[in-house]
Amino acid sequence: MKLTFFLIAFTLVFLRVYLSCTGAMHGDRWHAENNMTIISDHFREEIKWSGTIRLDSNETTIASISPGGYLKFRLNDKKLVAESNLQGEINYELYDDGEKIALDSNGRKFIAKAIQELVAAGFDAKERMERIYQKGGRLALLNEVGKQKTDPLNAMYMERIFADDSMPDEYLPLVLQKIGSFGTDNDKMNFLRKIPLNKLEDQQIMEAFFEIVAKLGMDNDKVDIMKHVMDKGAVSGEIFDKIESISRQLGTDNDKTDMYKKLIEEKNITEEQWIAIIMDASRLGTDNDKMDMMKHVMDQGPISGEIFDKIEDISRRLGTDNDKTDMYKRLVEEKNITEEQWITLIKDASQLGNDTDKSDLLVYMAKKMPANENIKAAYLEAAKKIGSDMDYGKVMRAVN
Image 1: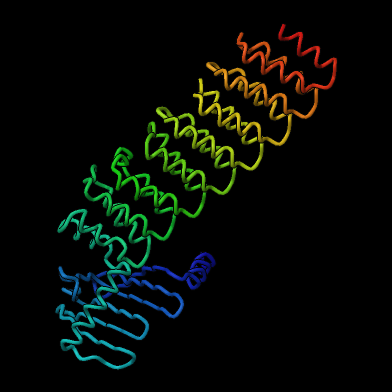
Image 2: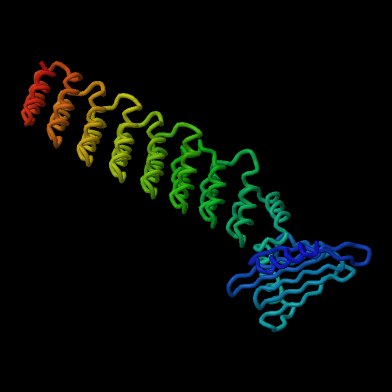
């Protein structure tokens, strides 16, 4: 047991921010003795207190300290000591860089400033938060977020703001501004998830929400929040565009592909948005990823003329004839292909590098293409590009 307590005490010495609480008997009453220390480079803040301490409603002075209690505050070279005698009367000692300060108007300002620092450090935090809420509601709490010295304190206020059932719409822009000010992405994500997603229909709220998402430090966190939005219901319009834009900026093709596929599965996508996703796919690093995305698009159902043309254009630029052939065959399976598109695909087949690939693809196309004189003429022209008599004969037999 002694070893356990020693290890705990040893660990606390090295904490840069720590809280500790001990107790001692004074006469027939138990007084809690509390310590709070915040240390960083060229900064030291210490708060020690015993008994029940209450601040005035304006938080500019100490309203009362229970008899025998005290409050000791140090901020670098500034010190405040307030002690209560057995009658509850408070005696102050104030120091600035070792110089004692008289309890005059300057001394009162010194006390007020010290109390502001105490409050910002978290002294009397929960009780103070409830007092603020009772006095000014959620807007008053919102105004306090960002004024506290640590993210956990700011997060405590924000959690209290979200504790009630409904959030007035007019508060949401300020709420999002405060969420964006948090120092850790975990806090940002936690509170972004609390925003009612139906409120993203408001332009201002939507812009502020996705601005925070775009600035998250880790791609995994961005993906997590965007999927959270999409999992709660269909997205369209500008929300779709925001997610697509952020997805395009992700660092790995795996993350991009994951998000593109999820976007493709959304309903009510406009042709312009389909094309944006296709163009995003064309920028992926490997042909396999490009092909996977284009096939995923086509798997969703019949594609329009412009989308067909974009996929054909990207397919023609793939690095190997095997991949090109694979995509051309997939395109041939589409319904409602125009005469012009058939002719383009047949010309693509004629550009393959060897006769076997050309003949195999043309034979495959012959089984699918409609009876159309212009398409047949393009087919016969493509057949002339085959040097092998055997492959040429196979192609010609397929069309007759």
